[in-house]
Length: 119
Image (cartoon, rainbow, N blue to C red; front, side):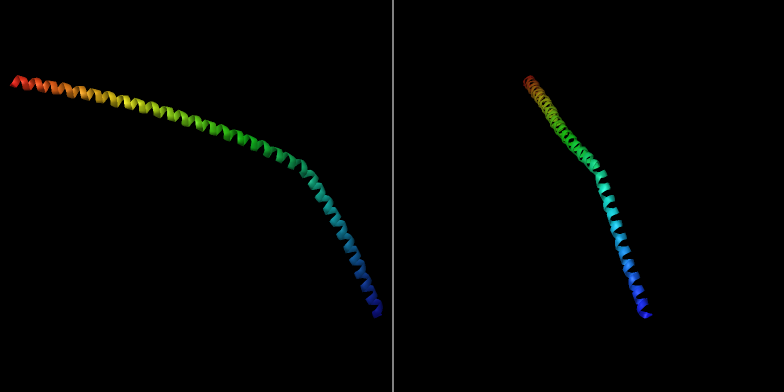
């Protein structure tokens, strides 16, 4: 009886192993099918994502160039304004200096007149 029990046990083990291997192969094949299906569905999404990334890259480049151009224009305008302010300040200083010299000359003339009249 022992031999028969051993044979039945080994037969059951072999049948279980074959069923397990078959099941594993079926599940694996099913997983590969699912993987392929997922990849097939993701391909168009990948293409659209690449296209959107390219569009975004071009738009960012265009906007960056515009910002650079605007920055250059702003710097140029700032320089022009500073030049105008500098010229205006120079004119004010020049005219003030001229007025001060005239006032000093007038003061000297009046002082000389006063000195002559006192003599």
